[in-house]
Image 1 (tube, helix red, strand yellow):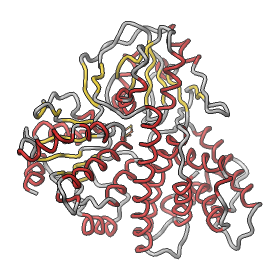
Image 2: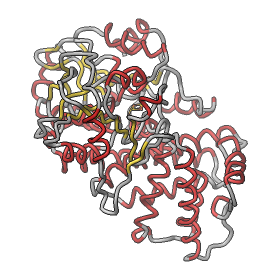
Image 3: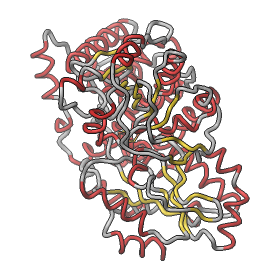
Image 4: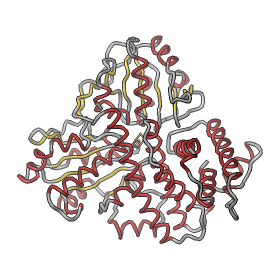
Length: 508
Ligand code: SF3
């Protein structure tokens, strides 16, 4: 799939095609990239179908241009599934021999995947910026170009971060213009007594349609994992049956879905293969997501989706079993934090808040991620955690208290809302009259897991943020030399023990 869209990118770039008229190809390229992200689509049949679709797009595009020699990615053909698999095996990551070039190509490709995911969400809300699509083509085509040096690719990596900021700003604008600005919200984590549907993933337009279609049906809707921040948007508060958030980060779904009892709709990642047929039958996918044996709901030409089958199924199933009770608070995206700016600035000036810790990113099942819970628990009382992404589930139910009414865990939203945290940091820099974002009392201790998170990191690097700590392990696709550049130029570091790291951060 990646090789094929890289071929499309090369035809567009070399043929200097005007992408304004390529609406369908532009969207399908985003969708193809999205399908390859960690834990999005496990359905070989759906992937094969999409590759064939993209080969057809590619060959159609080729007809309209006459360019000299093209890369194999733009010209190869496959007759059947076996030849497709053989092709895939010969053009994968390891086909690039030089490990530094390979490492940078992967860094850029993962960044582009995240960019594509966020651009697709924005497009679903009707917002697009073709400059971003053009950059996606430029970067993908560059990963096929053997004449580019390591230095050229480092420059392109930073440019990917620049476009990462642009795409997150675009999605922020799309979300807030359609659904309003996130505001402080208390979200119920218990259950009611009605049958219900659980919606997971990141796509707010899917949630919007599901809420509309379930209204007055007697079926409640709960969010799961990265969909939790939807509760913070004013537009969704009018739905009385929007009941709360069920469960925790994605990796706990195997047990939690068994106890939810009702249907589950995945709009994006992270899907974990269900361990029983009973649960599999209750899982539906839509958009780029997919899982073999789970019903996939497609949109019509107007983007409308028919969720009636899911609603009918919900009515036949038992109500959710309660696994937690109480509530959690979130909604601290940039607009809401700016509204509290005076209070925040005063708390910093008076010394009531000594330091902010950006602990955004992803959660995962490895034991080593217990580090983040322990880190949050052991942080001094005069610190505040700024979070986004599903990493928050490591500490958002700990009751860490507040500082003069400011909660010690401020959740801005989904992983893409890390943009909000950057906007908040830039605003604080302005308020305090600083010339460098790194002079702020903000430390970055970020956890990563899925490929989409790479674009968040590259965006922060582009904004000039230094000394980001990344854990629990540094990405394996960083070759020693590329890791060295990141360490020397940006002060990127891994994590150590909780006690040592807290000491290090507090004294920095
Ligand atoms: Fe989580 Fe998969 Fe990354 Fe959007 S849902 S942050 S891991």
